[in-house]
Image (cartoon, rainbow, N blue to C red; front, side, top):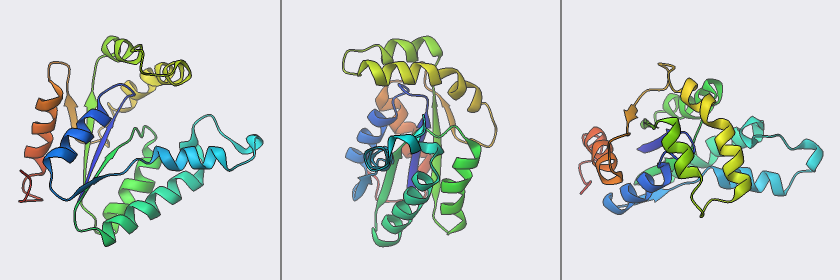
Length: 178
């Protein structure tokens, strides 16, 4: 089973993923951004795109890696990753589901002003912050699309409450979740 946590940058995806990982026995947190970092470091700069998700290899590699992990790991895969392009969503998540893999998809919905506040925290690099702030409006608009299921309004929820909500939603899939 896969738990995919989607949402705007600064919505709490990684925090929720790490909390879920601590509560689900035999779970693994997979970060698709690492493939993007790899591609950016191993392609000529003239081939790089503003968003590594626009690179078809990023989507292909991530599908292949996630499918391989799912086929060979008897546990829960937790993936904190923003995907706003519905075609890319179908290309990865849709294909995983078409392959018979259970993918529980959640979108952490957070108001713009809270996202901006979180993104201004000192632990975020200024380049990453600037890029993420530019993406807030597209994220907010995109996640209104009904094809992105599992939207959770997290404005008044703590990280623990978000995690408990997700655990309850996936409980029937994996009885060994503590």
